Length: 318
Image 1 (cartoon, rainbow, N blue to C red):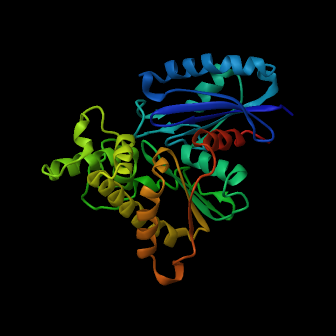
Image 2: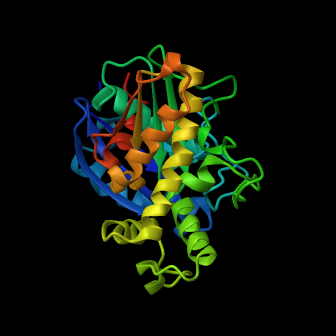
């Protein structure tokens, strides 16, 4: 049996990848900008260029069992990326086949949040759990749902798109899908930025450190976090509002699958208690009695890149 696998996590902003051994250790890793290339083949070519030295130093392709990939709208059954809202590449992309052709290795692909859930189940805080949900809070909002120890895929491979569920009917327009009021429109890093801009516009006379930043370029979820830690009212209100919406959505998800835990993962979790406290409060407030105080809400304990890389690599271990 081969000693190594490659795990690739394609996010809306960054693509992270690494070489993983059979014990779940990431031996080397790197990243590239996902939307740097307009053509998907150019993206795969850069990926190949960056991974080749890692493959060579570990004995060449013959020492690798394959490549596992987590990608937005990645279909486990077909190996295609299909109509991904947060990627430049439109339509149906036969991504697994293209990567296999380039690398000469077996390739398996799944949804990026499903890969993160596999990483949590094998190596993270969900180890030993058979019922849990991973929510990825990054450029978008993804989800991996585990029931009876298995990732929920549905009949077509696309089950569990919780980020696109409507939580505010008629609400904010999601630019990628054209649908109004989805969870992703509010609880993603992009959504935090939009909420900050809206609050600054709606309350022009309220002083805020955020007004020192250019709305077009410099207001990000990170700048909102930095201002919130300095006691800025609008920045703190942004996280209260975001947590309220996320918590309401999580209450719906709890009542759907009755998980043992919900694991929050991704860049927005760096806000810590600013996002966790209002989320937990709103979740519990919107649960019926039979579900109250039963579900652990926690942050992933794995490094942000590691869970998805490990989970993706697990796809090709046999």
